[in-house]
Length: 155
Image (cartoon, rainbow, N blue to C red; front, top):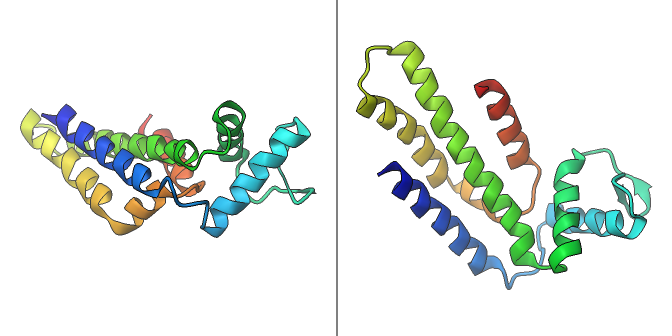
């Protein structure tokens, strides 16, 4: 049951990405991240630059992932945004796992069904929130930072 819920959400995120794939990088962050990734490839280095100047404002992992996509499949909006779909799905999985873990701490005598529901409620609320839906479709570093923090706190 849980598998199908998460599969349905993942397919929905992919369809959202397919819907946006003909749209060029339009957000300010998307354009900047694409330029930084292009400069990573051009400079053949992992140091991030923007318009030739050193860029230390954001963590370099997202830029490096975008550069990897650019190097393998070219400048594809679909595949570049697919990075965010996968990271956002990981965020949902970590939210589910952390909500279950917190519920078990505060309710050790709860049944497995109650624990699953306690994990699903915040996960589905996050998946349905407009800001989450928007950020899953755009290149950004916020989602990766959220995954990093929740993963760190969970494990």
